[in-house]
Length: 187
Image (cartoon, rainbow, N blue to C red; front, side):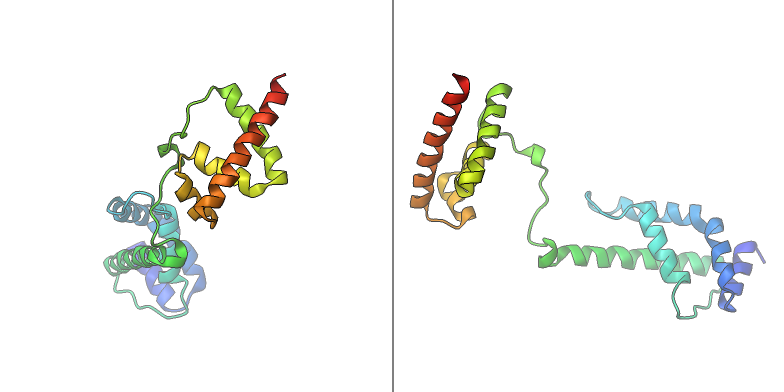
């Protein structure tokens, strides 16, 4: 009887210390198994191989339900099944609406600024927006959405929950305010 099978038998017998002896012996093999499982997952997976191994190990050895192991092969087959279930549960959790299931992940770097401006001007506009935000946060947000993100006025209005007409009025005010503020700064 090899060492792993002996420890599994001890765990089946209720020896709590045997579980601590098992992990160092099977960790490398479980990690390889987890890495192989994760290779078939979509990019952007929040679980890594280490987290998957630990979660699976806790389910196999740390549960109150007594599991009978018929040897090393049975243990690793159960570990593979536990990892599969963890990945399925994780995918289902991510697919729920409250966890952003209807949304697609997009990297912010994929969106260039709507306008190309020199760095000095960009910093000046940024500082001016901070000042504007204290007096009119909606106007500052509209500038960010329209000027920096490149949304149409209608799209920005919808995001802000205002009418397009109000958005155009706010845009006119914000442009005039920014022009005045930036003109004073440059002189």
